[in-house]
Length: 174
Image (cartoon, rainbow, N blue to C red; front, top):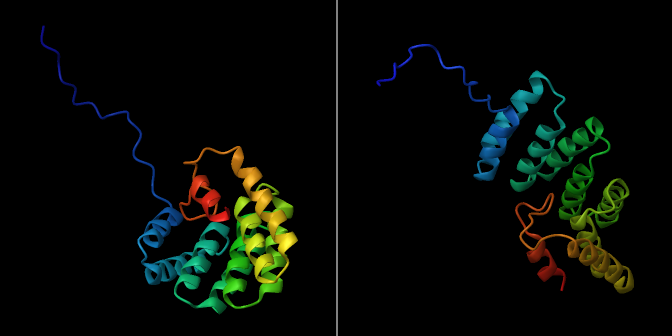
């Protein structure tokens, strides 16, 4: 028997609209930082309160070497979302790039206060301690990072690591 073809409209849900953040993130991941800056500033001037957009804008500015603008947007993201350790990590990266190691360390410690399992913060504190000649302290941070990585699959992509896997992080520490 032949089946009738229905001309009734499909009941399938329309594809979800891609958020402003997702659009900007796609540009960011393709290295189109200027477009990220233009688009994101425009969006934030309209509503002004999305910490994920603010953080992405800070990263785009940092990648363009505009560290003063990067820190401004990072601070705005922190003000909007005080309990997100990723914002403090980002601030630490920018401060480190500016040569302000003391405040970078303080920001990383704040990130760890909010999330004691933040592997990248342990790793960065290990590196900064090592640079400061604090070898025992450095070793403690690296050991903490390695202990946290033990419970994670080698191919697991780490938070705030731009795609780095747990296995690669272990190699860097060792």
